[in-house]
Image: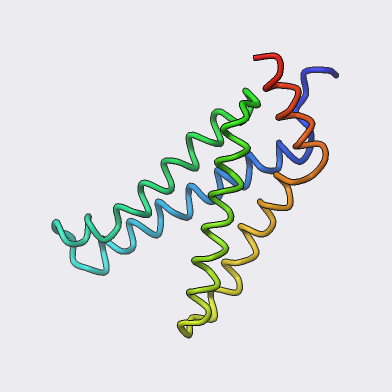
Length: 124
């Protein structure tokens, strides 16, 4: 089937939707932990923004635009940095959180993903 997305891209899309749900859940938990109000919403807004960006990437990944691949590489690189920082600040959950962006980065750097984004980009 010629129109079928490569496996690495399909798994990437599932991972992005999973991370979207996790980010929105984290944001909602932060609002509840802070008792709501403007402070809670402000404290949770980076999670909502990041989650929204992941949802956009997951929805648009099928187009194969080059900006999506570049955005994914930047996104996962930043997430790796944040998780390492989290670990060095004493949160062992950073090690578990580190697995998701590393897995995503490996997927986006696979040959099939590179070829998918290269072919889609040259035809656009």
